[in-house]
Length: 275
Image (cartoon, rainbow, N blue to C red):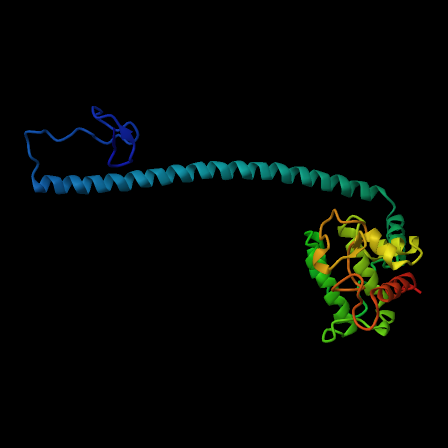
């Protein structure tokens, strides 16, 4: 198989003309050696044929595109005609109504819309940005989300340098932000994690910190968990995250308070946060 020197189409050796572009494929006679002048003219003729073939192809492509555009314009004209008929029908129906009635209806609608209170809850009292926490929770990066939650607590309390929260920090923590943190954890864990979940378990144990830790998985078989031993998985026990009462080990506190004292204050703050 060989290729046509003009259009590149394949052809069998015995073919006289290209079936695509019509180029003469007859080989030179073996006994007659073509002169340099003849070969030069053939080269010019071949170059011209290639240009003409390319031009013809472009014209063919433009013709096909023109047909497509023409079809799209026809479809657009049909759509415009339909929309115009629909608008005329709406205008006709409006003309049948009492203009005064239309105006009074619009006024009443505007009054009702204005009377609707803005129920969008505030997410922070101090301008905290919760987008990173939301992204971490949304993608199931539970450990990073827990670490970032602790960073948020310290940042809001202005305790980044100390690295722990005092009793006054917990008692004075903005309730709106505490509620936002809780709601984000609940939302993206399908109600498995969050401060409210922990508070409910805390109350069911009679505020017994040891029993509470047994329930949430911070203490297993009388062994208090270190932070690195926690299960940062959606299959962890309910209330397992976030960790806000301690950082190194569940039986130790963070700062001057024990872990039990820290958690008791956080639970009390959550219970009375809206008051």
